[in-house]
Image (cartoon, rainbow, N blue to C red; front, top):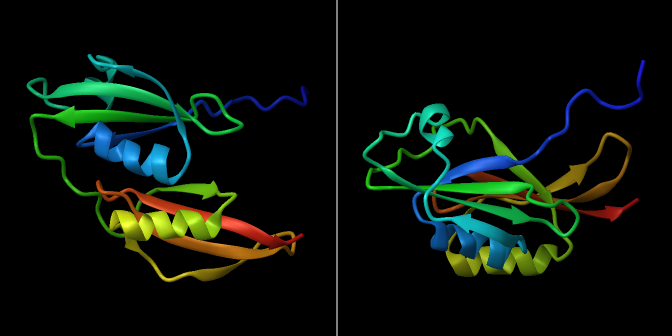
Length: 148
């Protein structure tokens, strides 16, 4: 049996109403780098995201400091997007280098921010974690480890 895992996670793709507004969160607030933007979005997105054909799409990929194109954003315009339902069905969980700065930028951007919790990892480390919703209602949980 190979020691290699049988799958590789390529990226998470979030549907957003406005790429520029989403860039304020994922690029400016969280520090992802925009790699490229396709002005005419991927046609397959219409099928898998069940986007009405009258809507227009754009597509962008973003990289973290250690993972190339690990996040994608698909902008859908020309229709009203529903907000994600509650309870949240997914979350983007990110370790951040500058927890306080990230939190300050989230407050300045006017994001809905959940109360902070103390993080206890399965291997005994302690840290901080906090959840927030981006402008499209996607849950983002940021954390940092304080003790190793």
